Length: 223
Image 1: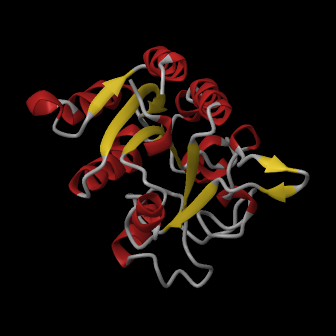
Image 2: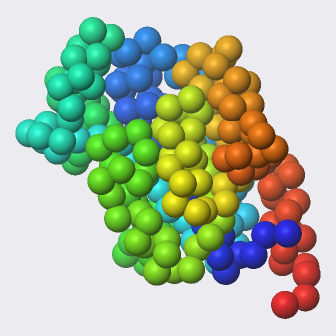
């Protein structure tokens, strides 16, 4: 059973730069169709957790306009991949904060109420972990969160890096397998299996249906 009061849904990098065929990932040669398969399960998780009043946190990977927070090695790698960070693209400068491509896709926008932003948190991160150079840990601790439902893209990079960092910080993570996608099909299962070594050293891995069933059980259980 999950305790909604101490659980948060962490939605990793569901951005146009990763999920739109005109964005950074497509220019770098990633399989956008694979990544977009996460949209349905992520939306199901958003609907269920919002109905329960659970906390929802979104992350966006990207850099300051002057690229001062982009390591030279990362910049060089992106250049070699044909999608240099900071260069102009159809959705604006690639992986740069404030650009259209940097924002979340329409299907995974933070909930709004009356035109005003809700209290769903959006974390802008320069690295792969949602905890690297961000205040995510402080926000979660202030809200009494101990368990994270983790979904988004990509499984082998930002999702797994975040889960590993969260585990070191003492959070219990449940990675939602079919609400995550790897950049290449053959990487998905090994990435998930590595999170489950030694009896679940980095928490649990479960599919969306199982997680949704646990959420339903939580709402039906006596307080």
